[in-house]
Image (cartoon, rainbow, N blue to C red; front, side):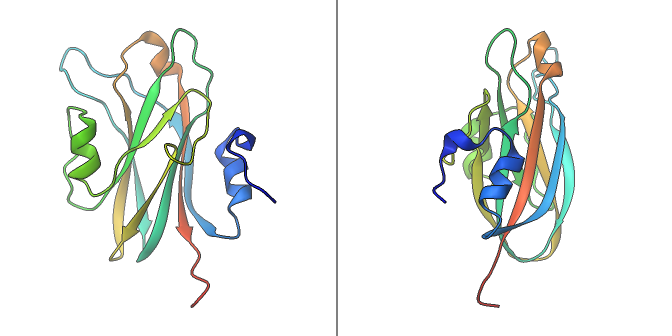
Length: 156
């Protein structure tokens, strides 16, 4: 079966397409928290995820239709002890933290934006964080799905 990005309408669609290559480790949906203009800082939605050694894929997709204007969300898997930035500068969360952020905007799915691979070198409790730089009223109504997949090692 040939994979087309346009076939993916939710992360469950993507999971069905890549089930021969990845096992599901974590999957949850929640609402975004708007950027805090008073304190000039981004608000992170954080989830603790126990991961063992291996290769993983972080996936993010917005699950709600935007009303006023497109909303963009970012996701990063933070290793234990990593500082979570208060100000969102893409270059800082991308390179200082060992992985570029996963970006979701609109209801479109692109392998180059909505997913990112990362490696876990020791068993640990990672924090998956999702944030946005938008502060409009409809941000609080925006739902997202985030998923962590573990790459299947066929050589074990």
